[in-house]
Length: 161
Ligand SMILES: [Zn+2]
Image 1 (tube, rainbow, N blue to C red):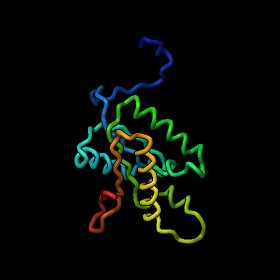
Image 2: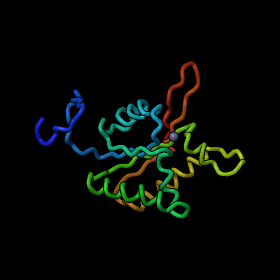
Image 3: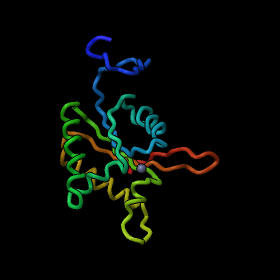
Image 4: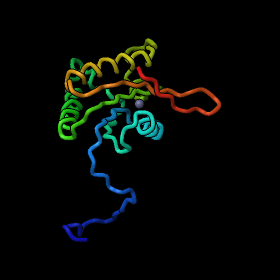
């Protein structure tokens, strides 16, 4: 009402209480919303990170961190934001997650040869983790791959890689 909000057309007050504590964990993952609920559960229940752990979600996840030579603009876009985030939030732990059937990786597959995308993603996770460790020597970096389990109903399984 006050504070210069006269031009607000619509507002919604969330019921979730505000938690001002800075989480010490940052999760970098793909934007694909189908994996979000499982990832949230994994982060809270398995990693024992705060429910409001920081998140950077871009299509393809950490992939820009592997592009220093190919697409330095993409690399630097993510690098600058991660540097600022880690510095201002005091991040202690970075969790990078790739996932099966990633649309970004399928679209960016190079050449007509059917490449094993999982292998490619695991390699990228390794390269990105090495980059993150050199950028942030005091931060623990870990990498995970999310895949679908088999029948009867698919669930997401997180494998440390
Ligand atoms: Zn994806």
